[in-house]
Image (cartoon, rainbow, N blue to C red):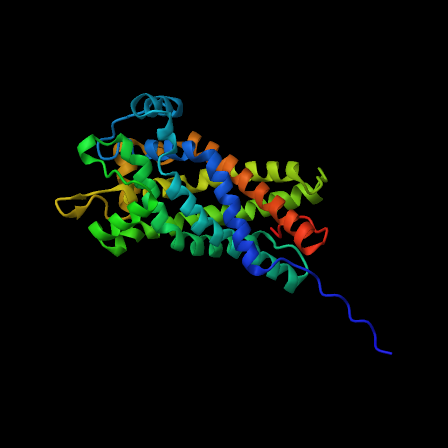
Length: 315
């Protein structure tokens, strides 16, 4: 009589990890898009002249609403959603896949260095495929601050991508790719690795938190704070390069270091963290919402599709 073979452990298909990651990011973006617009406007303000355009984040919001109307806070939403559909789908899908492979092969949770390495790889992959949407997003969210005759007036992300390709060439869609990839590597190395580590600490450390929204919230907020501090200088370089225009046929900036040095010299070293408040209050809630949505979607898929009571996303 043959022995009964052990049933194979049910896990979500690899493609589902990417789909859930992208859907989580897009859901979070619907809530925080106005803060992303404020962050971009504040980072671009004073470029070249060093003139302070906004006193603070609230003044920026007030100025946008008074000049352009309340719906202007959602300018570039289509580009933001495409960015999440490409960038977040890639980075969270790759990271979740690498994380589960690590656990399967080593039979233990990743340590800090392993989490950082996986976050860096995931960030680079997601950023490269998400750069065209990023370029469109930066331009669409900053268009309203320009004089009427200088505005690009993109109708939507599809129109933006088509016009950029037609007017500036296909390679313009990857303008600022290096700082975008560099920022994404720093963001994901910090964000994903610290989220994993904070979550593990809160679950197994003195607090002994159970898997659930409370655990995901605290791990996400701390992860978002660390990520904001480490990634802002590269984010401002990325924003300015992707928004720059040609001056006498030459690019306004030569590269990432040129942006960082010129900002520090003309606007002060702390201007590299210009827009810190909207950046964190955009990144913090976005991190929280993305991870909570991802954890809940994974739980729902495991329960209702696979029929297993497995909790957690694998991160």
